[in-house]
Figure 1 (cartoon, rainbow, N blue to C red):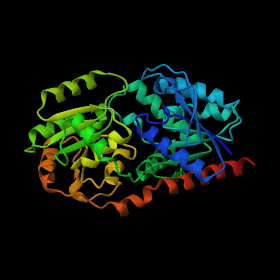
Figure 2 (cartoon, one colour; figure 1 turned 180 degrees about the horizontal axis):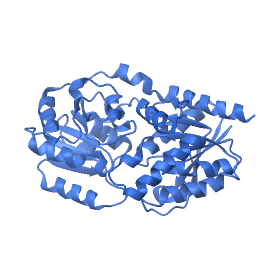
Figure 3 (cartoon, rainbow, N blue to C red; figure 1 turned 120 degrees about the vertical axis):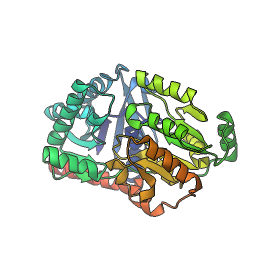
Figure 4 (tube, helix red, strand yellow; figure 1 turned 135 degrees about the vertical axis):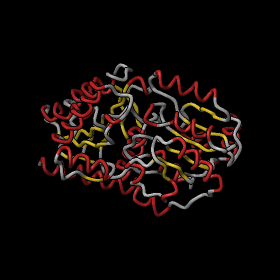
Length: 368
């Protein structure tokens, strides 16, 4: 079986939820099954033209690095490329690239579509872009050979809006981390002037729906004397990202690390005392799952995707309520590490790879 994957900026080590999903999923499928997999990357985000990652082929196709154009241009070029690659299935990720599912079907391809979340709910999109994203969702859900959703929240959305009752619920996964060397921990903490278990951490892109402006405001309002560390940046500089950086610079005890990956990110997670996710929108929050894999107590907004993880009620606050978040930060000053092993059983990449392969096999069997 040969699978072509599009809708992601690329792998490995490209920041983003879809990118992390693909980086873990496809090597796991490759390890378990006799498959040929090629992930189509966007050229501005990777250093290769043709490469390989843990047995998975990776291929870069040009696209403009412009927020409004890159997904649609790249997926269009990837769609036409797939005509000649002899793939059995094209797997499309996210509703923006989902706009090209009908074209892929017209080109004779079997298509699996994964819905990672209603991106049109994000504050950064204007009216026209929101309408295009909603159309992408509609067409992808209607015309894909099989649909995968990463949460029950998304499953309910497509049932109610588009009447698709047969989607496959397959969660995102998380890797249980291996210990990071003391040298890496020391050098990483020293780089950002951090002390073990004396800081709280949040992770994500500097876009409005992540709610980092609320978090900085709440941190200043709270009585906490712990450092707030925000790991991330923006792919496309914007008025919001510049204002956020200015807000952080003017605040007391707030550190922006920029993008971190690999052992440096693990080091920051491993020595943090608390994780915070103040998001207004998530599909299924991989950063939260990663924090849970490090046994970090968590404070998260009460949006449906976060509620679906089913943390204790004390972990949730009303989204957008800065005062409520500040109160939670004060209450969390005495929280200790938590055992999430039961929570994380359903988010096992080995199992997720098997579930995804079952979907592929259904599609190929139907074709024959």
